[in-house]
Image (cartoon, rainbow, N blue to C red; front, side):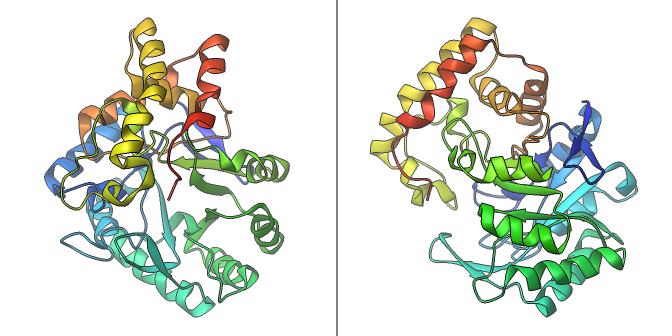
Length: 322
C-alpha cells in the first residue's frame, strides 16, 4: 500500500490504517489469536498505521488498556515499522456505552501518556489524540500539556478527535495539530459543514473512523439482531425500523459494487478515499479476511456517476448518529 502525508507537519502513514478498537470491545467476544493474526496480515499488506486508545477494552473481559496491551504485544520486534496512534481523555464509559467519563487536565494527560507508553511497550507515541474535549478543562491547557510531551520526545505529533472547528482553531494556536479523527462515511457527513474546511485551511489531515458505517455499508447487516456486547444494540441507526429503512441506501452501494465486480464495503471505502489525499480512513476489523477486503479498496477508483449517486445517500439516512 502507498504511503501518504497525514497533515502538513511531516507525518507519513499508510493510505489506510487499521482501527483496533473492535479487537477488544464493542463488537462481540474478543479473540486475541485472530486479532494478532489480523495485525500480522496488516504488515504484509503494507497497512502500518494502527489506531488504538487507552479506553479501548472497557466493557470487555480485559478492561481499560486492553487494546493498547494487545497492540504493544503484536508490535514487539517491529515497532519501527509501525505508526502508532493512541488517545487519552476518556476515563471510562457508562450507561450502555453512550456516556463518557471525561478527563483532560494537564496532570491527567501526562499520567495517561506514561501509562499508554508502558502498555504499548514503546518509548514514543507517533500520534497522540485528545479523545474528547473535557468541558472542565480549557482545550488550551490540555494541548499545552500534550505539547510538553512532544518536547520531551514521548510524543511525535498531536491530534484531536470529534472536535468543533472553534476547538480546533484554539488548539492549533497552542501547538500544531497534525490530524483530526472524526466519524465520516457515506451516511455521516456532518464535518463537511465547518470542520473539514477548517482542516484544509490549517493543513490538518482527516482520519475517518467508522468509514463503513459500523458495518452497515458492507451490506451484511440485514436485521437488528446482534451478539452480546455489540454496541449497535443501543444505536439509533440499528433499531429494527432503521435497519429496514436504511436498506435502500445499501441497495445503491450494492448496485455500484456489482457493476464493478467488487464488494459493497469496498465501494463505501473507495468513496471515503475519493474525498482527498488528506483523508486516511481507519476501518476497524479483527479478521484478516475483512482486512484484505478493506485494503483493496484503497486502489478502487469510482466514476463521476458513481460518486454522484453515492453523494446523495447521506440525506436519506434514518436514525441519528448516537
